[in-house]
Length: 195
Image (cartoon, rainbow, N blue to C red):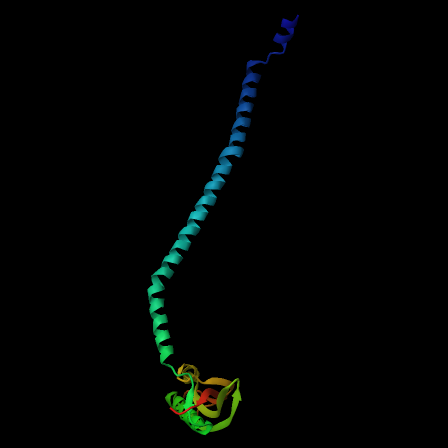
């Protein structure tokens, strides 16, 4: 009787093929989800890391390529800094103020400006340093204003700008350059020592 039971539970050939095909699809889906997709994601991540590394390499190569130029510029700036005095040297504050006034007049003239008034401010001592100040009012072309302010910082000794007021002044000619009414307090450090 047991043999009758087994033969009656046997599947038809069509069903057994369908079952085999279903098992094959399940196994293939499992391989796809558990093996192939994770490997593909890892490959994409690795390719992205390689692209990032190549980009960083290009950036670093560019920086390394500029390194000699930057070192040369640094050396030139250091040499220029060693040559700068950094402060006015005069026997007294009045002489330092006169020297600073000449510097300010020269700066305005180089920028093509017209000084309207230059007034010495009282010298003041702060942290064992003598500060010499100059209040300036001048007319400067708008295009030359940036060069004037830049020259004040780059000269030796550098002039600090403590207060700056700008006002527009129309040019007398139509289409002419715009003139700026400049009011500024310049300041420089000074030492009271003979040259």
